[in-house]
Image (cartoon, rainbow over all chains, first blue to last red; front, side, top):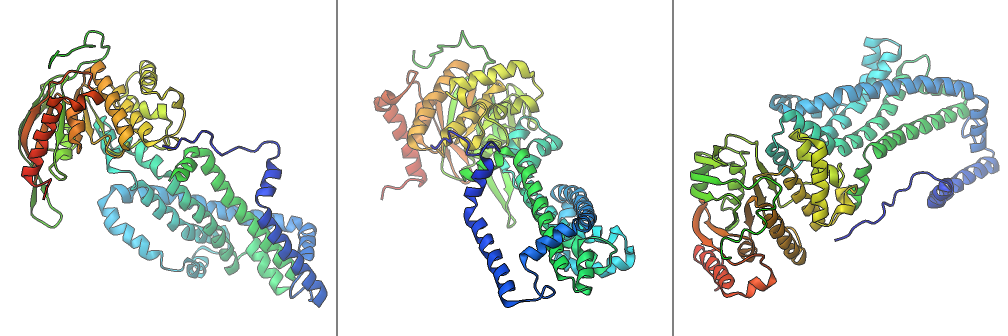
Length: 271
Length: 274
């Protein structure tokens, strides 16, 4: 018998930043402590930069090499987004086919699930051999690695509609297309978004690994070059930029989810 | 008054209820482990236009199956089913269903949920928008139009589900234990609300319940079913005056009807006093 009077969800307004800081104070404090300890340890013990650069040295490097990092970050971003986009474009129609076709369900789905056990990263050298040194092999690794969580979550979501819900719209005269558009798809969206979030994280891994194997640009390539030159601060700088990229992309999917499915948060709160 | 209380008939603005006719309807299922299960056997039942009929029976007596058959959602094995003098050949038409689970769509507001049948049946939105608002107001949910189902209580959600069924102005309302998941007080209130709506609109209602008292309180007739296979064991006619309420429960005919149905369950072995 509980009625939620006010939705405890306020969009950014004045004081939102201050609110965010106070809410996340423990986490921010922990990070600050770790970086301070790191900085002090490097200075006190006189650890050379090429073994472990201090946080301040890494930040310095980022500031000095911002153009290099930005350019290579842009290359990696392209690979991630193309691979992820390809995943979505293939995974969702495939999930629909699995849900609606008995043949796909019996043949293609077990096949896909067993394929998932292959470490996709191990396929990267083969893809490079076939597809060359350009953007394509990285896109393909990002695609392969981000594809499975999206397709599996989509299938689970599209199957989650209750039997009564389907009967209900059928009793109103709904055909298969209407049932899909009005029930199965919206019902599946929270689960699909769950898959998209995992898939986005995986696409970042895929693109970077692709660059490790063979590349002429990108953050993974930059790391490889820095390693060879013993430019450890730049190596760390690339890791930082890559992490920021990953966090931003993951949160972008989360933001789209919150905007597109404002009801989803209410459902998970009430359960 | 008895039996023919038709107050409200003259001022009704919506389509009247339609009759149902079932002749020797049987349903067999193919069981999961091979073999067949006889869910329903030779059901003969006629429900008059605007009549409120309840079906009570033990779990697994095929009550829900019977509802699905009448709605045309699953085919019967033998026999004929007519709704409004037309043979049922698949889902469509003049029928609305309310399930035990409200099955509201979480992604739609209360108002958009009520308007779902209007969209699917491609009815005129403007006139039905007015009707949807009226219905929500009549069950005390006018202020909740723009809320999402997750923000409502169980009783409120089921009221929305009933509004959703009524907005399409069905001639027949099929209700499968609609109040089974609600607490006792809410349930009693819902019974009174449903009676009021029925007295106003005179839809034909086929109402499945586990509660003998609920069935007797609401119905013109109560169909008692036995299980495995589901058959009609008895039909109890109840012409207590309406509106019925808490006072009705103490009247001798009410007690007699309840006792008569309970004796069937004792005889069927569903209830045991030893």
